[in-house]
Every structure is written in C-alpha cells, then in structure tokens.
Image (cartoon, rainbow, N blue to C red):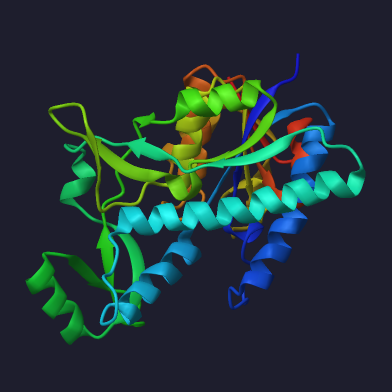
Length: 314
C-alpha cells in the first residue's frame, strides 16, 4: 500500500530570490518543482501538494490598489482565492506536461480552491502581526487606519505596511473532496497559501475574513484531515539547525519530537522563519502522523526515504 504524503512547498518552488515574478519565471520554477514531485510519485507515494502564496497575493493586492479608481478592489479572502487558482493552474499544467514527457500518465493533477476554518474568537484577531500588501507613507497609513479601521506598522525603515491576524487553522473545509480525489488517483493541489480563512456563523454558514493562515500550520492540518502518513515540508535549506550561526551550530538529522520540542522551548527557532515549520512537524507527529520531515526541495525524494533532511519521529 502506497504511503500518503502532504508536500508543503516553500516560496522558492514558485519564485526565486531576485526574480521579478513574471509569469514565465514562475512557470519555469514550477516546472522544475514538478519534476521533483513526479520523482516522488514514480517511487510510489500518494502526493498532495500545498504551497505558499506570499509574493503572489502581495502582487494581487498591489494590482487592486492601483486599479481601485477603475474597478472595485477585492477583499483579502478573494485575493487569496485568486492566487490559489493561478498557482494551482501552473502546477496542474507543469505536472501534466512532466507526465507527458515521460510517456506515462500515472496520475491526473487537479487544483482544489480551499477554505480553512478558523475560530472567530482566536486571540490572534486581537493582535494582528502578519504584514501584507504594498508599502505606504506614514501619512497614508494613518489615514487608512482612521478610515478603514486597519492596523499598520512601520516596517524596518522601508515604509508602513498593513498587518492582519494570523489565526490557527481548525479544519480544512474541503477535506472530504480532497481525500476522495486522492483515493481516485489524482494529484491534488490544495490549501494554497494556508487556505482562504473563513469563520462559521451561528447558522452554520461560512464567510471569509481578513486574515492570513500560516502555510506550514495549514499544511499540518491538511495532512491530519486527509490521514496522511508523512508531512514533508520543503524549503531552501537542507536541515533544521540549532545554535544557528554560532560556533556550536548543529544540523539535526533524525530527532525525537520530545527533543525537538525542548530545542523550540530554548528559543532555537525564529517565529518568522523555521519556527512555524518546527511547530507543524511537532503537531503532526503528536496528532498521530508517523513521520514529519523538513528538507531541501531538490532532495525531496531522498528526504521521503529518510536519507536527507531533518526527520522528526515520535
């Protein structure tokens, strides 16, 4: 029986540092990523893909700002859905072309635009921390704070930027559809950018909310909800490090979840960098997953087979 793996792709899978973000650049990056994914499928794994969308949704927000005098600007949940659609399209096309070039159509790729339920009472809504969209002057930021009740902060001397809440993911709304598609043999791209944050009303209905869910935590929730065996988080570094940039720096290979939790409590992992990835692996193993891995994109298959990356076990 093949093992089911949720593969969480980092930003380098779609856009490389220093690139402008043209469609051609992103398609070429996705094409190279698709080759790594097909290696996993060829090895017998059931693959579900999820990905980041930070630069892409940021571009959409800028386009909304610039076009607002001509057409109505869309709220963040709609912008997130737009980014899921176009990134999903790139991956579906790249994967299908990769299968075609090999002469064997083992699987069909499909994108599911995914909603992720969050709790309207999550404490994160009282403390927005996630920067989104373009930079503005202080005067413009303060005007928007007054007119729109938004939260803006000064960002490292680069200007003022809006910040939104980053609530914890509670449930993948389309989990049953994703599971059914995987069991039918499809390669599913889901929960892109952490998913579209939605809250449940008193009548049980869902509505979008202005927020950004951490993509790695959402990947763990997706892996849990579709009964994955392995959570594989791919990034641009080969291992998790402790004592980062110190003389005692050490790369972690196989590590027990209890030991990794101690390292986290000691402050080894930054909140805006490796912290969420480590938290996602700990949650997955604690929630019953057999193994979680953090590894480099070009070592994806080797990481799945246990010879590369940081292997988190119970």
